[in-house]
Length: 228
Length: 410
Image 1 (cartoon, rainbow over the protein chains, first blue to last red):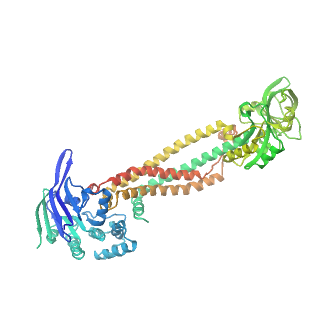
Image 2: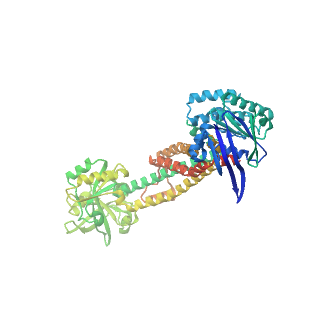
């Protein structure tokens, strides 16, 4: 059974009376444990589709189901709860909370989930060690490099034990060495914890390492390849 | 500290210069509000105190209808039982019976209409400052029968001086003619010009004898612990004295409605200025919080994307505003309260024309401050209320944002 599924999803933007179709009838189902990339040229609808799948935006037509629940039927508070418990996000610009330390950023989701303080501390220490940032736990984002910030973002995305992690061009702002290390980290987490990953990317290295590759063009799925 | 408080508190200090300026404006406003409200409270208390000590007392007890007619027909009998009632009344610091009559005072061929107040030379100085207003000679005493103290303009108009003998003509309570010779024992200055032209004081014993008034009094002036205690004292006296004969018990505010009006107008003018000041502070807080929200649109979107509920985002922004105002308020009170307390203990003496003008109104020429508990409490509620109001729009704006719009905003 698909963990996350888009059925006939359209997204049309209207600007000054001009309609632009960003996503044009996409059907996509993600199975548990998949490591999938959405790729394609700029403006093909990758980020828009990711936002729709991540309950950050509403489709103009069609439905999105997460763990069997139709997102279109949920209130904004229920969607917030769903994002909190079932989804993890990694953004291109890291988007860590600048007034919180690395540890506090990682604990943020768990705190919202109501995880007791002791457990939060243990889990955040463990995940920061896993992403190689144990010694940076008390640093704020501005005191860290881009790669370090993105690793904290990865830790924040998976520490809440979500069903799916959605990553929007996570390696776009990183040098190739750091990007490769980060990707290996996510592959390892995918293998070890079974978390489902869905990336949007331009990065050939990411596309190459993914086990499922979905190519978008003009808002439609042009190709959907799985590794044997 | 909860997550929302931690986020809010740290966000307050993200732009220390802007936060510092907003806090400084709040501190300035709080100090001004507390200082000026205390100054007005001190001034008004002093005005009331000086006015009641000039003549009326905090509470006056008279026969029914006296305050409207002021004739000898309305009276209270001050017998030993009534004296005991005044002595035993709760909150009464001092009391003094008086007889007020009207007559014609003449010296040689000149005559003037006068209000003659008969006072108890021993009790009266405990209630009012009449005795202190004597400029030449002395106040009336029981040792000098048929002595009279004239207001200064009256003395000037009659050409009378201490030692002169004047003829007082009036009508007694018994409706017979009353007349006698009185010796001027003193001349006193009364701030009210009209009163200074037509006012004279004799002893209570002489007044009762002259007006054939027995143990009656036109009114009994009562000094309470302070003006705020007056209603309680009046209520107590009303219930104690009720029954025998109808009495009218009035507090200072009913005896001097023009003073109440003046205080009201003075307060209104001051509060209008303070409201403007507080509104300016409110806009300062609104500006700071709105800027902070607009600058953090993307960050607030991330919070929503990560699962923070819109209501929690609203609370974060609200707490930021209250924290900002709270710090300013706290610092403001820390500065303002000792400052006002210092001035409360060190009244500022007025000099020159300011002093002369103040004395003209019968007030001691000093500026006093009075810190009432309601002052800092009211300032706290006002500033926090303004901060809450100012934060509403930015907080709603932050909470209503859709995460996708916020993430797209940069």
